[in-house]
Image 1 (tube, rainbow, N blue to C red):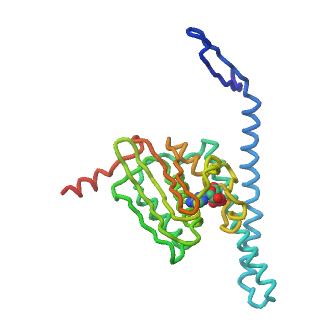
Image 2: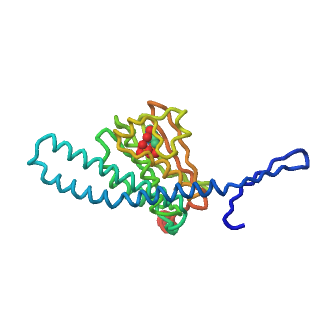
Image 3: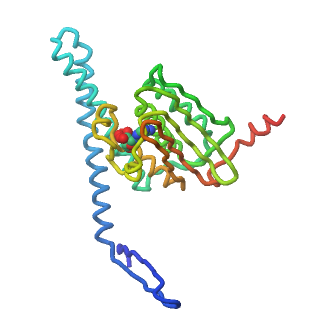
Length: 270
Ligand code: ADP
């Protein structure tokens, strides 16, 4: 029947008999839809007033030299917080789009190195001299999916590797492919994560310690975005981490979404 959602579960009762459980989850489904709509609408509505506030803060920032020191500090603070709020709204809207399934960008073949190069153009700005970046991505590696979604997933992993390595260290970005799969991984030598926190990392707003998030300017939505993007690409996230040693976040894509560029393959064999 239209508009009714049922959850069906079967278990083996004895040798030949099965038990079938049918649960009406229509109400749960409707509540979940209401939650998604509310988050999407609220985020959208917050965008316009925030743009106005940001505009005024930027104007104030231009004239701040003539103001008392305490006010100058306040303006810098307002500017930082409005950027943070903007990022939060952008992330919430992106998550809503990822959950809604409609308005999705068409899947296409993309060069993995193109996506990563474009991310690194902006990420290098948040790195310090103590960070050493190494990328191991073959020019001919290609992935099938949405450029925007893959960009935000890979970007979140790379930005996290930088943010959670406050003392610097090596950051390795790698693409490995075989007949079975393609693996995109980001490895850092940063703070690492206690194993008991790992299962909750992809939950919305989950942070290992709340203080960490506010200092690093994160929204707590990055890994939730990664999880949803990977779901759309039939991929799985693997997290290996040791506190004080570092972390490796790997995205495992199925073989059907991975290929080597035929043109550069033939060029390299010439
Ligand atoms: P945030 O915006 O807080 O970075 P994320 O969803 O991206 O949110 O990450 C969730 C939490 O997982 C972070 O707050 C941090 O505690 C932990 N985390 C994520 N990536 C790393 C990493 N590379 N090293 C250590 N901790 C990490």
